[in-house]
Length: 140
Length: 132
Image 1 (cartoon, rainbow over the protein chains, first blue to last red):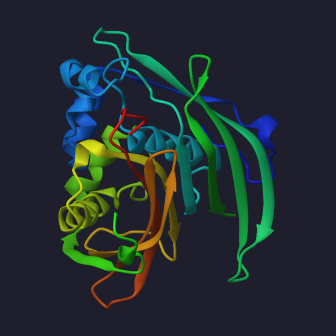
Image 2: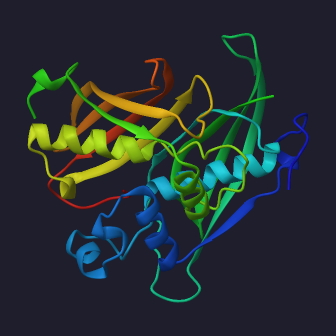
């Protein structure tokens, strides 16, 4: 779905993405990040994690996908976040849901004179906030 | 880690040619349905630049946690782009026994023009894992 660029955060419906172990394997192959904490319970446990966790960059990728859905595929100028809590992905067929919600939308004129829209977000897995200060800036 | 690494550069890595097939594979993996190339796509190059940096300073991947990642684009990526990435260590500070390394990677195209600047914080720690 897409929203007109005049909208505010309340008009942007939260976007939900299901992440399973298969999705982690798929992202590992696509990104070239084969760190075993993203696919091996044994290694994840050995380094003190509660289980296999999603790649932080996969979660940030889902944020980008939420922004594209909200803005009707507007050009992304900036995208970023802090990785503050792990997204633990169980070895089952259900996986977990990452929810991306817009919290504030501000409009501005960029340094090049182009209009931009900044979207601040909250990204949760269950009750846990998993990203710090996730933010996107798009043209429009 | 030696404070002298601040302002050192690593790379360039590449050139990496952006193919439609790889962009589509990455889009599927990140549930990206946009027409453009996914904005986190350059992580493919950034991983290589980071590994070059870690190998050079003798840090092991297992002790690195990805703390933060931000992309700032000058122009959108395009199929056929030949991208190179150079990583610069921008800052180094200690935080509770860990070292927090601020990096800025500049991604350029075949003409040497900047496409994207990517800032990453890498936390180098011996203790526990984290939200990589």
